[in-house]
Image (cartoon, rainbow, N blue to C red):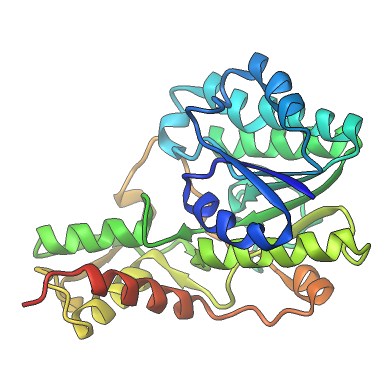
Length: 298
């Protein structure tokens, strides 16, 4: 099987390169190989690689910046997936694509299921929803995995930001009324490989599935957990757990509105693949252990 991986240098893309290798011959492209905003170049590049499976981990993920650059966000998150999906349909290939909890408005009191109505609050969420819709309408074989609060030891994410700020500042003020399940890029990549294998065997239908770790937390609780565990592991930090102040969303205004509830119900995916998804802290601990190995010894 010829596998084309798009976005190999992103958080999820780096992990996917590892998990996809046992499944076939992997060609992994980064931005300098394929600019997703240059949609006119996409068809020729796809033709040149003739993939049986396309795994699209490339996306515009700068949520706040999307508010001022909506055209670019939509080209990368909606127009490009539409072109890829049509190619997959015409060539009989399968497309794996990643979406987000931000397609929902966060007003539901329970975790969202795949069939819930979408109502994104910001341009990023709107562009990702448009990408989902384009893929579904194309008629290709596809799996869309919605996830949330993605992190890894490398790349820009909340946990790395908290560790940086905790080194620099004596106190932190963190939003406490937004809830979700931190989900590692490692978990997303591992489950993707399982989904691909099951899909090839006809045991996993095309469609949208939710994929996050189990459990829930707030941004404030996550920051508290990260600082506490980092201190236990010997990280040198200025911030202590008692110095992390919980604040309301309104006290930390951002260009893009965020959903208060980012929880996704993953029962459909877990049932189809026979999975017992790990609790969110498992992979947070793994990440901190990895980072501790790079931390200067004191």
